[in-house]
Length: 186
Image (cartoon, rainbow, N blue to C red; front, side, top):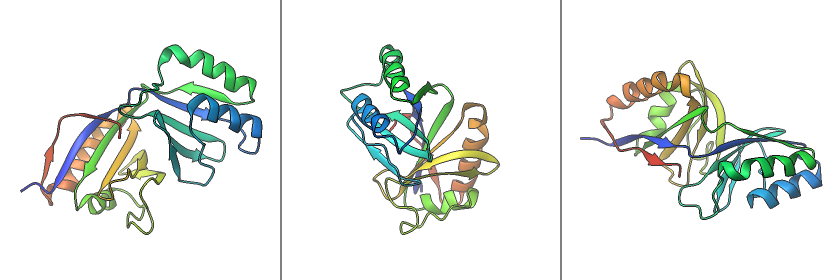
């Protein structure tokens, strides 16, 4: 019987935001443009109705449109937001097509992730709403733990998606898994 569910998740919009977190003008501009307070602590996230902001580095965040948001991050607003952030000393890049996402859900999700990735996925070490960059097999990955404690989202370069999917399936096989229809980013 299947104890795990694997699915591809769609990433409608993803933007890389860069800027100085010590600059109040930049932080205020980012909050105004995306209605989210940027996470300033390593490997943390913050979210609004419209997007999830993931800390990538001291001066870099990944903003991903959330499923069901009423205030969408759409291409028609990209240029205006990029210009506003440039005026505030930041930079905005559209990376929507660069990544593929997978979700693994179920009681053995942390165990499956641990077979491919050196991170400690115990809830005390990798709490909900936390993210981290690491390797998944031989592929660079951004791992996010949504509010469901037994689920992980893995974002990888589009060119490596097949390798990561295969690795997740192989690791999940011993626990039993099913493949669900693709879903939206949580």
